[in-house]
Length: 202
Image (cartoon, rainbow, N blue to C red; front, top):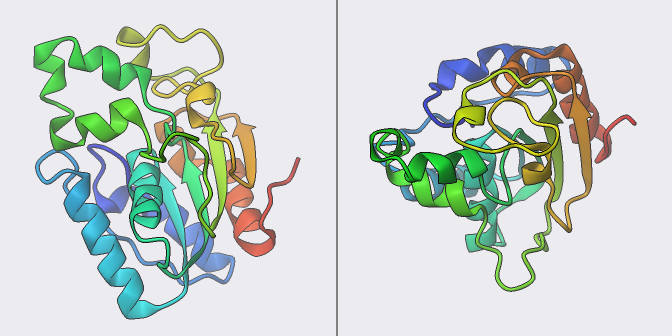
């Protein structure tokens, strides 16, 4: 699943890499700004229920959508989820954009999920049955710094700290920018390793 402002086609390179590794990827696009995450969550749940056991690889907002779907419907048949640059704890850049009306409109109906992160209850810890691996980037190329005061490593849009979440199975940081995660051989290799073995290479 792609991220905010990204068409399904943005996942083609990564999908091709997964296909070469022996997987059979399908791309689920959605209109994050106009329709918001609610419809995407609903469509994802319908697809999973129709097709059976699956793994999910998602970029940025797509990771939030995927995990929120699993929080809302814990019995969905998903074994593993790989999130690429997903601000699971909420996005400082999104929060900054919401303070400036002209930029806030660019987030549309996805603003709240991006700003706040996953709705996990009081513990704010992943407890779903799916194994979750998160790949973060550390190349600071992107416009996020204009809206967020990053204090540590970031990928230009999302801080590495924003991608960490208690309860997930594994976390790794690679040399890529936020958009670059979709075209990074290192990120793709880590995704394949997690889908096969449930962990990253460290």
